[in-house]
Length: 213
Image (cartoon, rainbow, N blue to C red; front, side, top):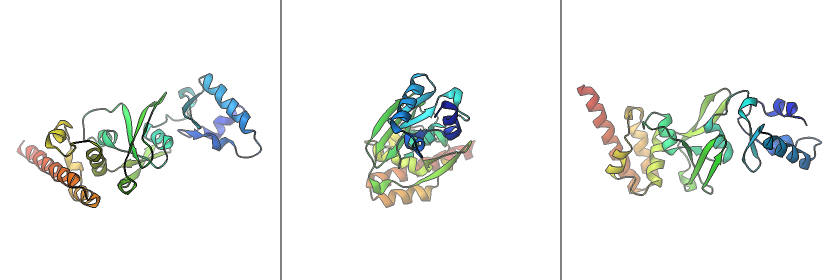
């Protein structure tokens, strides 16, 4: 396989695994040697063992960070501050792409960005949907209510009003209060129920402030 053939196979993919190149009559050792050479030459970026992305000059479309996050750890979804910023619920840009998983936590610093994965119990691994990122890319991302509760779930004292205020939550009209409270109820955690009620109260206060302007 030469590099032109590789581009034909993976040119539209934000990331690809080595296994994609092993179909048919190929020598796995030779494929690995070629991948190593192309990585050393700056044509590929190795994201983790067995996972690569084309370097920017060779990408037909720019790889979206959310798609890369999903590829780095299967069974994860983008959440926490990253999803909250995506929905405009917090004002800050988040330099680290944060996800949750029922697997082992981890952190990867790659040429395409920094990716962090936080562990949650498998029963809490829900409340996400698949977003169309454009250019043929899709990724699993927490819904706004779940991203907020994921953050509360993982943050010690995350239900404290002081902490919720420090987040500088905004555009709270984008939250579905009934869904927020129901998600907290399903978890069975008093901490999450307290947080949900306090967030609803903050949303109501924000709405009243806008109405008074």
